[in-house]
Amino acid sequence: MIKIEGLTKKYGTKPALNNVSLELPRGEIVGLFGENGAGKTTLMKSIFGFIPHKGTITLDGEKITHKNIEKLSFATCEHSFFPALTPSAHLDFYKEHFPSFNEKRYTGLMEFFELPKNRPLRTFSAGQKNQFEVILALSQGADYIFMDEPFAGNDVFNREDFYKVLSGILNDNETVILSTHLIEEVSDFIGRAILIREGEIIGDKTAEALENEGKTLMSYIKETYHYRPDRVGKALSDIMGEEV
Amino acid sequence: MTRKSSRLVPAGIGIKPVVLVSLSGLVLCGFTAFMAFLERFMYFYGKITSYDDAGNRVFSGDEKMQPLISFNANFDIFKIFFLCMALLGVYFFLHHFIGSKSIYTMRRLKNPLELYIRCLAVPVIFIILGIALIYILNFIYIEIYLALVPEEYLYPWWNANIWRDLL
Image (cartoon, rainbow over all chains, first blue to last red; front, top):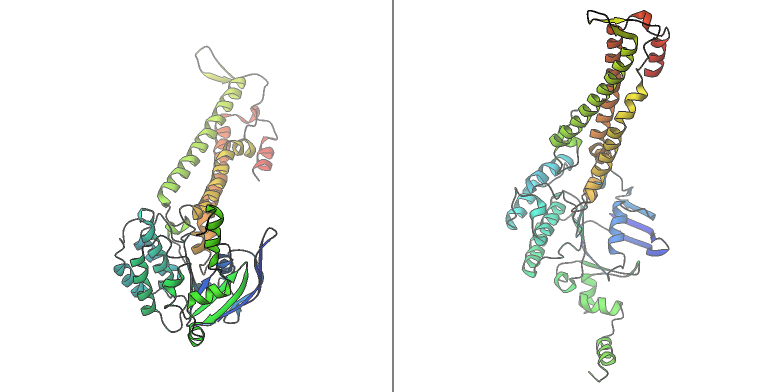
């Protein structure tokens, strides 16, 4: 389990995360939702130790260090692959550095997405780069797979295929933490929704709890964010100077 | 445990061109330092020698041969090379931010030194080779002195100075 306690991060004087506490048990597919700048990426980067922060983050009771960090993988829209390397060279690199690397899954996903194996990543399209980024994260052999806006630039068919494949290949002890704005698309796929706003967790519910309450993910998010449906009409009316 | 040579540079950078360019720089510095020494040597050598009627070079006069052997003199020529090597290390680190953030992958590796080995191995190896070459050149200069300059034309303390300088 990943346990986060009192996580606080500031960029200069601006708080990015404010005393965040969270538990992420194994075997969950967690959706992390929030506006741009809400703190989703900062939360993920803090867990990996990429940025300095206050508070404690543990993985199975131990601090996350180089000894256990291989249990975490990261797919980011910024991409973490090596642009000059081919997928085949990445395979060698990952096999060398990640002993639990799942080559069978890697090969299967590469074939599914029909990605070229011997072309440098820098020559790939934006969508292909995203696909490869996610393939690496899923194949690393990690227990916790963090995905930060992994499908930015992918078409809807690709994304839909991906959700199906993802829900089919995950083991019971694998956890996916998915940060995305594509709420409707992932609503059937996630088991828990965490809402973050201005660096604070403002909502955390399982899909089961939402179902019992008769709410959809979208309605839960709108309710938690105090979404005002009349806002657009008012704005248009102000701009156009007439009743819309 | 041996380490593949390709693991001495960041992933995606070929080791061969890096080594070739660095080696060329090292050789160029060595050659320049040696030529600079020869030029100075011949200048002072000319001061303690003259030509006889038959056109042979003979030692003459009261002047002594200047002790031109100095670690610092060579080091000045190698300074640019060492600076380039330091910049190469910086470039290798920044390479992990170009085109993607592969730094995230490097920082997730089990071996925390992997990133630093890949960034610093080649520059450090070539800086060590550069320092070694400075010493080798100095030994060559000593041999040239001993072979070409008679003892009576050397300052009595030249040996002491050289060793103080080299060590």
